[in-house]
Length: 274
Length: 271
Image (cartoon, each protein chain N blue to C red):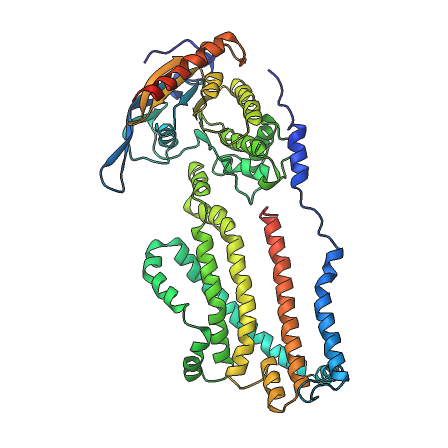
């Protein structure tokens, strides 16, 4: 009989068309236009003395404060304390969230018993927990980490559970047809299928817990942290310190976001999604 | 049911033990309806398939043909009657039955060759034997050079070839095909029909194809089982005594196809 023909030219053309194109380089700098313009306007307003200089400090003053904070080591200490908290809360919340989400997604009985309670629980605004947490755990690091864990927990649970539940029945049937054991189905069908959703949850947890870190430091005032730097600035009416703190918070958030996105792309490529 | 002489009858006698026959005896299936009552999806299905035969089941949607295939695959064990393969009752899915679904159902997180290897996941072969089998089946479906491609990078026709390779790689006794080309464009479909015919002739395994395409059923089948709906049952079985490879323009082929088609035209005309 005839030999197997190779995939036709049309198939190959389709394949070539489906290959992702290299990201365009020239577009990457456009995102900087707005911030640079804002700084320019800020600098102009400050240098023209149009507004009260106590309310609007000059960019130069902020830069000076930045040097002082870095040279004196205050920034490093504050940032280290904040990041340690954020990572501890993120880790605890994520691990708990993965477990809870997996049970909710995999076990219908568990879902029926715990699901409604969790759905009610997640409706409570995070900041509504602050009074209870401060009574139970004080104002120290333990209280803050508990608060951050709660912030990280919710998105991980929701996304993990959704990811597991939305594994297509058609793919589960493939596993069934080829005699996959329960363990194989879980690790080789459910997990890879749910992984992008799970990652989204973990990514949100990272962002939320960083936002919550500042909130916790602001509301549970004690100790050190970049949130405390903000409070100090506002109490002493030092706008330069406030603006500097905000910039640091934004920069850290942006860095986390960038790292998570890069990791997400790697995972997606590994899972054949890009 | 009597066995019709087929081009594979000789191969059957020499190559395969007769015990590999697929026997469907008095199979019925009903579902409880949501609004109460029962829906009889299949009733009194009797079908005997000799090893190496290609049997097409054709029928309009809702005649239960895909349900029948699911029962043979073992995904659903709640039915009346008996289904035997090689004299043994079918209980759940097994490695001696491969399946090709309508939607290719490849795992998007696995490459082409990894997806084919899914068919060998629980086979008692060494890793080396498995790689050799996968490579062999990549070649069988003509996908050399695409082993490392991801499913989203290949066309629908190529994805369905991967699915066929996955269904065949474990050397099943029976390959079940559930409207495998239904979602493809006409050109790709007829090309893959030719491919499937070539693979069947080369491998000589039993194939049971479910389709709503009469042309496809007659083109590929040694026998064409015509089904009708409510309740799903066999209307008649047409022997296709044409040599392989077949030609769609041959007068004998067209005559047989029109004969089968007439069943559907009559059914549509009936009240």
